[in-house]
Image (cartoon, rainbow, N blue to C red):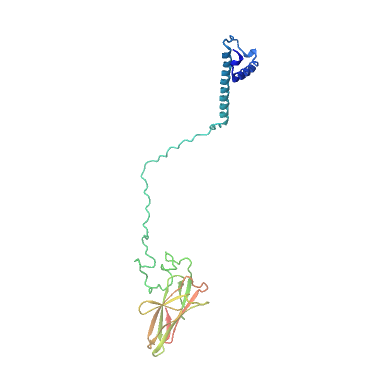
Length: 274
């Protein structure tokens, strides 16, 4: 076969293989029978082997690149216990406790009545039935057990010239007094005027510092001032007339006042307060 029978590509491959063959030493060859065949088959066989070797090299390089890029898997740390699900807690069989029932809304504890009433909703105590002492009871200024409520204080009330005393508590129950006027003039006292004064000892009172009421003929309590006229009417000789007066102290009663003096006076004769 002449040289013109090879293509340019085959000629370049033949020259490359020939250059490679010069690097092969006798130690690289194993004993074998010399190849036989034409020069065309002998020239194409090395080309096929070289292509196969190139493909194998590319595969090895790709495998190595993939193995380098793949992150290593984390191995479990020795001695780390694995999560084991806890078994359900078994409870001994028994009767289940009933849920506590809530008290009905709006119900009052037994033995109590609405404040300010007599046990019947919507009623209020008779304003004319004061205790006459100014302490005790369950009204404002007194605690649930009948004692004085926290924050209230006692004020001494001195009655007339006799000097008898009563006690009032700020924000507490009212004090009901009886004022008696006796005609000692020896004759009929026409247009006799009975007056009442509630004054502070060692201090002064202004409007609203003390609540004073007079029991009217129709049974209602009529507010009057702490210095007021009770009535003006004729009082026959030797006869007497009475007035019912109620006094109470608000929670804002002046702290500087600790004693009150109640005085009655009339131009009909003699006055007493009980």
